[in-house]
Length: 455
Image (cartoon, rainbow, N blue to C red; front, side, top):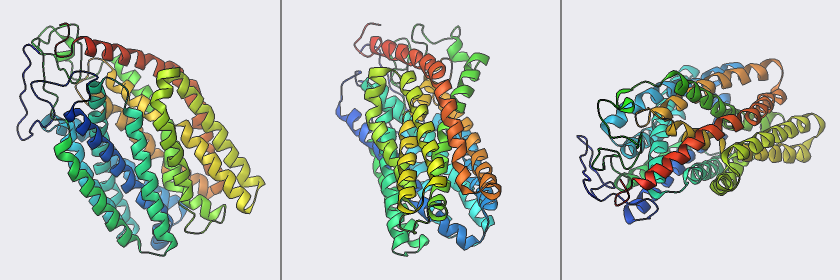
């Protein structure tokens, strides 16, 4: 471990990265704590989002707005997330990704609780804007931390971290559905959910990895390897470049579009599935949250299995298979909404939503790993750009689906998922296959240059 140094930035103390950085593959106590902290952050973030989804029809009814106006108001959430995604790299240069994630998650919980108190649609939109800013900060920072923990351990964890997000979302949505069925107030339910999630985030703070500052004698970062074949210095283009080159930017944008296509399914589940089940399948208030639970529950299973599937079959092949599942699931739900009635329709819709959720399980985590592995970018920048593109797509989706619902009917709101599934099937191979080859090369370099390894 010759020449390893550790210097923390002002205001942030290193709780996990020390002069003796953990060797790759060794689950040392600091690494295990960081894995738990990351999983808890993902679960809390999913839970606070899931908690509000079953109550969106109640909020829409209380605000007395139509589908198009409601979709426009919901677009304020991704609009805020666009701004939050740009702020994250700036904050991560001052504080570690784990610290930013924990603090932002507490703020996200508070913002989500306030949404339940919206008296008019303008306030509802403004609070969703704030919620989006805080959630985007959490999203980028906790994914950056999760990828750094994955590199520290030396094997894939990102799909399992996203699985804990889905687990949290299922638990939050389950509690929200139960509250709706019991006719509990939205405000009381969201305050309770926010308190639990904020407390969970606070617990992760001392367990996180510290700043990525452990370096070898050449000044190379041992936690997040970049351009490991050369020492840092004036002649190192990776050290000079602060903005991505044209080829890298195009790949980032393409990965963002791929993630957006998966987000179409998530947006439908979050924004429209409860309304869809209430108005198309005539489900009661206590059953309306089952659409979101079906998507997230299937994602949960798919993400827990995702790391093994990716290691066995490759990211690109799993992505293509996922796109096909989205087409089949959304297509079944679309056909069932016209051909069936009552319980039969409800069951087909839920199975179709679940199949679509399974299909996108590894798409967003795969795109994030690919974006983070692109060369020549400062830490967190690839994730921030990807997140920004994703949120831009998420900004367009709610009002677009709202217009479809307004003028064609709610049954047609699953049509964008079918189109998205076709495009995922076409794009997953060339995009995920290319970027993950570079990620694999990074992991190999990281193993060669770990403390005690060959320099």
